[in-house]
Image (cartoon, rainbow, N blue to C red; front, top):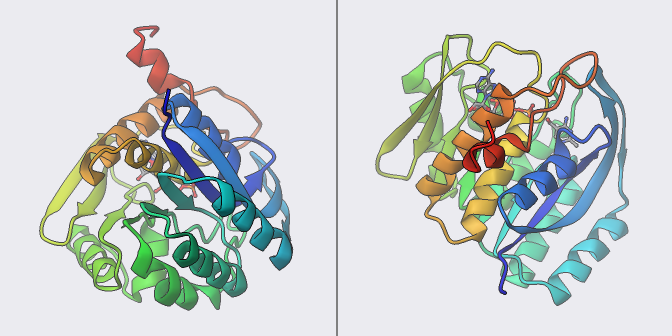
Length: 269
Ligand SMILES: Nc1ncnc2c1ncn2[C@@H]1O[C@H](COP(=O)(O)OP(=O)(O)OP(=O)(O)O)[C@@H](O)[C@H]1O
Ligand SMILES: Cc1ncc(CO)c(N)n1
């Protein structure tokens, strides 16, 4: 049996709802073999981030080499990259190992406001990594920081997507989770036309790791050979189910339900 393989280069969330833990759970649910390169250990729970401990440069470089020297991931996603040095390292190894299907979730700030990317690293993300991306998936505040524009309405979101494609990302997805309306509109751009993924906003505090889970599902689908739009469409259904069937774990912003999508596929709900 040949199984699709995906690599996540991201930070650790001991609470299991975001970061590499969310990525691995999502890969597994979508029948993709998951691998990890850990960039930082975040001490966090549903009430906030208590600490961030970056892995040493050598530690990350060796994880990348150990992975690249032996494995051939069909898709790779990046999450929390934390610093300029780590972004430069990932870009260098990306070229060296000639990986494909890069999904960039430009993680910058945790839901409670804790910084997960140093301010000065944003420019490095733009110049070094985004030109390699198959798709980049910012939320609205991240898209604002990457493009230098303020995003108030749908046409601003379209312009931000255009700018990301101009920066070299083949596709762009501007996520609408941070909007306040009753509908959430994620704007997908393929360099020529726009596609809008519209869903009802679920009223719940349990949205920790939504961005990680969504981009991991896109990565898993790309690893299996889906087109980018098909991957995003499946991933959107995955995250909608994961938010809807809430688990109610923790006292604050709890994790999403990574089991929900497959349980529904099996008719268990
Ligand atoms: N309350 C909600 N109801 C329905 N869908 C949601 C909700 N919150 C988020 N989503 C979906 O999840 C996607 C990602 O959410 P969001 O934009 O909040 O990402 P994020 O800020 O990167 O998440 P995080 O930093 O917690 O990982 C949204 O684009 C939307 O598709
Ligand atoms: C490790 C990690 N990555 C990403 C996020 C954003 O949800 C988080 N809270 N923690």
